[in-house]
Image 1 (cartoon, rainbow, N blue to C red):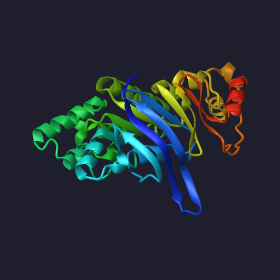
Image 2: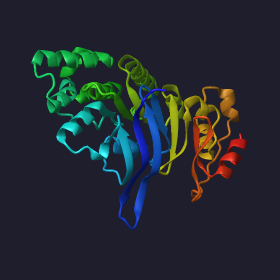
Image 3: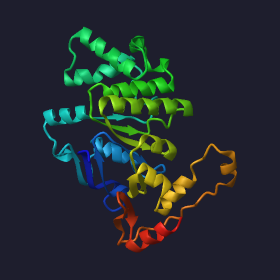
Length: 304
C-alpha cells in the first residue's frame, strides 16, 4: 500500500461562543495515501469546505491532529517550515469568479507564488515557467497578459489550477472546483485534473456535491453529514453497496441518463436522528467504514 501523505485524527472545528458552539466539524478521522484521490461528499453546510480549509491552515483547529508527511501541522511555527508546508500543499477554490484578483493579469496571478517563495527571479525563466503552466492546463502563452474578466468561467478555473500547480505541490485540496461551471466544462476540468495527477503524481482531496462526478475521479469516497463522516470506502463499494441510510438517500437523488429508469426512480428520504452516544466508526466490510452502533450497522447492512 502507498504511504500515508495526510492523517486526520479527531478533527473538531467549532465556531461561535463556548456556550453555544456551532460544530462545523465534530471529531472526524481519515487518511489520504500518496497518489490517490479521496472524494469528500455531502450536502451544503455539512462541513466539507471547512475540513479542507482546516487542513491547509486557513482556520486554526479547535481540537484534534492533522499530520502531513509525518509532521503535525499545528506545530509548524517557523517561517521556513510554514513556507515549505505551503509549497507542498495548495488549494483550488470553489468560485473562479471570486478567487482571482481582477487587477492582476493571468501571468501575475500565477507568478504570485514565485515572488513569495523567491523563485524564478530571472525574467526569461519566469515567463517560460508561466507559459508552461498555462499550456499544462489547456491555455496558451498569450493568455498570460489578459485580465480575469476577459476569460470564461472554465478558463478562470484553469488559471486557478495553474496557480495551484505553480509551486509543484504534492497535495492539492480541490474545494468544489466544478460546482460553478456548466456540465460540459465540468467534464473538461475533471479530465484535466486526472491528467495532471497522472503526469505529476499528485494527491487530491476532492470536495464536491455531485456523487456521479466524485465516483468518476475518486479512488475512495467519504460521505459527510452535519460535521461527521458517516461512511468511508472505495468508490465502487460506496456507490454499489452503500450501508448508511444517509448514503443511500444521497445516491437515490443522483439522476441517471436513462428515461425509463428515471420514470421509475424512487427517492429515498433521510430522516435525521441524533447520533447514538455509543456510535463509533465500524469496519462493516474490509476497507468499508460506517459510523454507528454495532446493532445499527448490522441492520443497515441487511436493508438494500
